[in-house]
Image 1: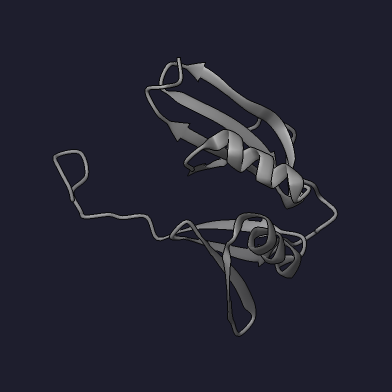
Image 2: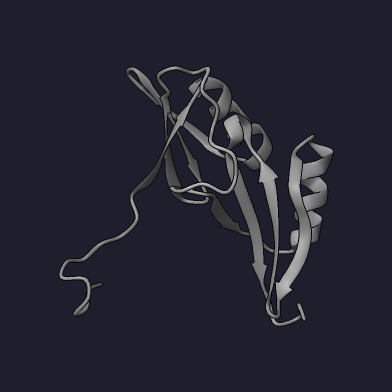
Length: 131
């Protein structure tokens, strides 16, 4: 789909993350969030919620992610059904939350997970029941 503002048809293809240990990060996405690991020569990727996440070894792995707030990609969001139940299941698996489920404005409930290597992941549910 395109319009006057976008002179070409574009759809999302992937998100690319630089991480300290791609295998460990892929395993976390698989174990904690149900992602599917894809391997190709010299790389490991994950499919999560239909989205490809490319995981590449970061050069200088002793350099952590920047402290929040910073410029650049801040987080990515995953839409879920029954966010409170999902949060409880993730906590039971040992996932840490940087923000518990809350309703920042009518119609949406959100929470933030602490992923590996400082990756911030939002889970959200859009529903009119949240006021």
